[in-house]
Image (cartoon, rainbow, N blue to C red; front, top):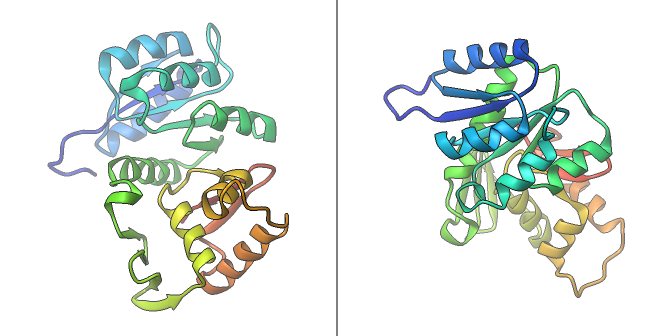
Length: 230
């Protein structure tokens, strides 16, 4: 529950009334203000009127699908930084790529337990309120503290020192928990577009990160890339 803090407003967009009602019930029970729309076209109208803090989109909908709705929302200044999550029964790689390329922050497949969905929503909302990398030198997530100035990670209070590139990768992923970074993005942000490295380089760094931190933090999204999760 959110206690006395202002209610966060969530827009849910899905063409199945039963799913809308189920999600609305569970989110309201957690203290969120919930508005809904039955398709992507109406989602644009509702979003403009309600100014939600987070948007959940299905992909396959009449009038306008979720991918197009997301792309249009991202073209509007007010929604360029609002977290958008896709919640869909489609789990094909090409659907995930299209959803994330359109500006989505997370891709969640149905069915999902309400408690897990709430956790994903909380992570997205925390991220949206976190200062950018240029404004903070520390990220705190679950039992990890990632200290940028000292280039060290504290897990349950115990320091873990990492080589520079491995640290930069975990900092990048943890700065946007739940957001999938493609291999190309990671290469570009860590090594730079003018540096050529072997295709196996990132795989080796990810494997070493998992050896040092544990398997649960860095997740592989098949055919797309990697994300920080917990």
